[in-house]
Image (cartoon, rainbow, N blue to C red; front, side, top):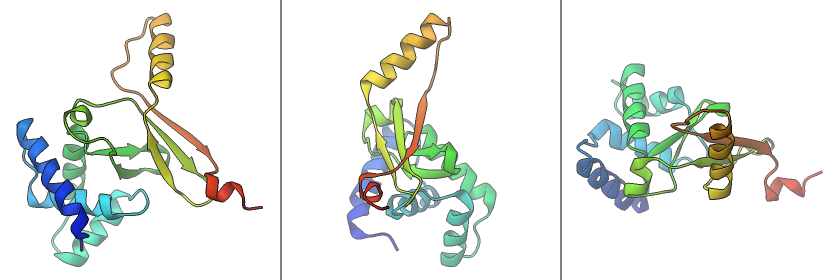
Length: 153
């Protein structure tokens, strides 16, 4: 069940999709809701299991298509290192156009924090330009310890 606080965010996501010419169907909305409600990044098969528990008729193709749409519309990001998905912290048109994103991944507790540091994005763009490369998307994943786990032995 989706927490009532997420409904407003899901409604805004549906509006953003409509403005971009897309449609947040029931299954896409449900997948997005599950991702937003998850305290940690969630994999496609975990999403499938949750959907099957609710309705019983979800398939891997259904989940992967929904995830593709959600990524395309900037509503979720894939954390490659974990092969899992996290809701985008940016909302609105900025998120839909895509943005340079960096993830801080705690190896102890699994927490993932999304951040957007323009300096990091600029450094990547500058280094790529020096190499004659024109990047279309860049995601940086940094592993380490979060502040809470840093105090653990």
